[in-house]
Image (tube, rainbow, N blue to C red; front, top):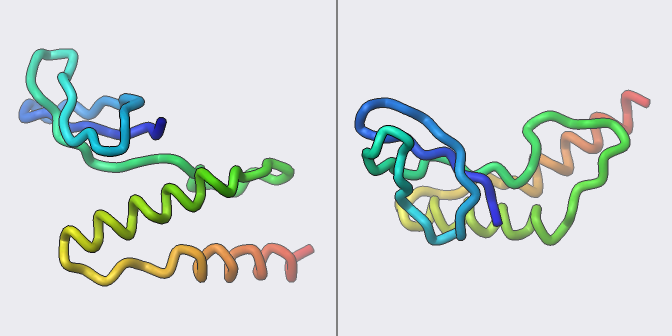
Length: 92
């Protein structure tokens, strides 16, 4: 299951592991928190670390779904990743 951030009305931000369809979670203060982000893939490149393709594809699908619900064109995550990898390979 993915790791999400939730923010409550009091401003607390907490991380929770939850099913993908989860949109709210109880905060430690007792308020309901609203989901902010999903972190399936590290934002930092860790040399020598392998990335699980199934998790990457699932995260990509979740991002596209969220953008579609908002009526906004999703970013080209695969294209960004290809350009980043290409840049890393050129720097070797």
